[in-house]
Length: 373
Image (cartoon, rainbow, N blue to C red; front, side, top):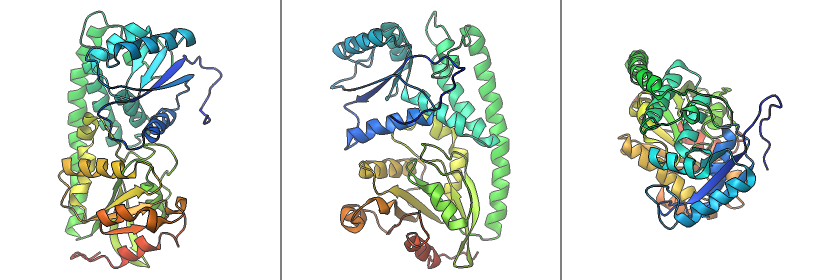
């Protein structure tokens, strides 16, 4: 089991992780999907006691889990004195409440888990505001119903605390807070637009890194610009957009921006909240789609990214598919043949060394653009 952050002064609840293979899950390798769920939990610095993985043939509208699977989970919770349950899937507010009652434990879903990771990863004022809006919108949907105790909504996963107990008080402030935050975000977006116009007026080409989370975008940014942006084996380690000048072989080619990584079933309200940041992609002359070449679900992850780009209206952008982490494959050209044929143009690289990054640097050095840096 991977090491997790532990503070002996904090009383941690007993947490059960439930990985679910649903009928709508398109992942070719379900174990890889389960591993990603565990990675999400660990990226949120959560200590868990028990894991349970199961497959559903259908979704129950009231409890999400079918009767037999629910009874199985109830028994696990009783046996291990579980206080919190984290599911790998998004739940409706009603399903979350019903499961919490049935399991006699606080229940958190995939959306809440990702929101908390984003909340911890945001460093800029704009990023924090975007996450705050998404978080408040999520909580607002959880306030419906009668007699709901707010401790599971207001407290964080894995940390005991009384939380906010008055639904009325929370409801009153959420709408006002969302409105204020959106106004604040609009002001920051205008400032970003001013900076963008200055760059466009200088006719500076822009390259943007996109891709599935943890594919190595930040590592490539660091390697190509000699930067020191946080790059670690942690989902959503980079959240805020970072832009650096791009020099290839001593020649300035423009600027390159790193953006938030995508993930399957990324909460829609997060995509909406981050559209102002992701608007940088609208002005990109070239998108570098960074792909983890060693991932077992590589094809599905590529599809997830391409679908989100389509949703953002970026389907017609010039894209270079960068198959990263080739050092983890014995024969990259052979093992990636199907993907290379399907997604062109492309390069195979490893961001670990400058030599293994050469195919990307060579492409950028000869990249044709009508703009001049």
